[in-house]
Amino acid sequence: MKFSHKHRYTLTLQSSTNSTPTMFGRLFTRQLSYQQRRIPRSAILQGPVTLDVLAKDSTRPYGLSESKKEIDALKSSLSDSVSGLEDSLLLQVLTHKSFAGGLPSHNEKLAFVGRKFFPVSVLSHNLSKEASSDPVKALESLNFDLSGFAAKNGLEKLVYWNTKGVTNATPSSKITSGSVYALVGAILLKKGEKAAHEFAQKVVQQN
Image (cartoon, rainbow, N blue to C red; front, side, top):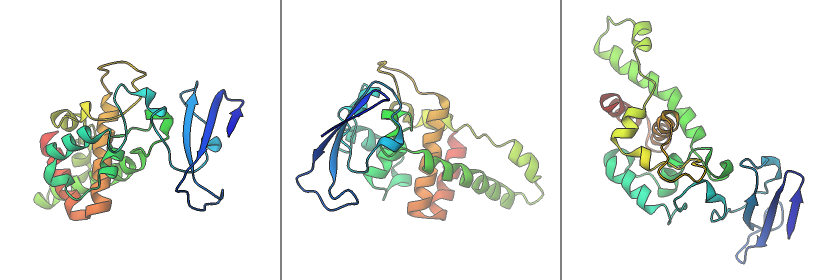
């Protein structure tokens, strides 16, 4: 079934052979071809997504099996910190919202959690060591740009973002820094506060 929309894209739906009942009665495997970089979310039906067409934003293959090299590289670089995290979650950490029109699970919400937790963790650690420290000055001196840590651990080459098809394009510091915050958020949600505190200190030391 094909559905044409005035926003100049085509939505092709193919019924899944192993489908289960949903609010639409069945799951669909979706393949999306589009002329705009952003597809209106209101026009996207819920269901499993195949990214073979969507991943035109990148010069690399994308998916759990296709991105195994990047996931393994992240595990190797941050072995202790990311141990116990699912591959699907690590792929989400590496995926910026600009990639493939924001359709894959991206790291925006994880980064939001990480940005809230990170300064509290660092400040509480610093103030516990120096009770006489001024919390305002400590906050002002805190470096919120974590792209240095990302560069030292090779995240610049691992993140997925909208390269617009440019080979060897370099992501901005905002994108790489966001991936580190997303990792903080993922560790906090999956491994708990103690593990997230330890990772935050590691980030500060290497940033």
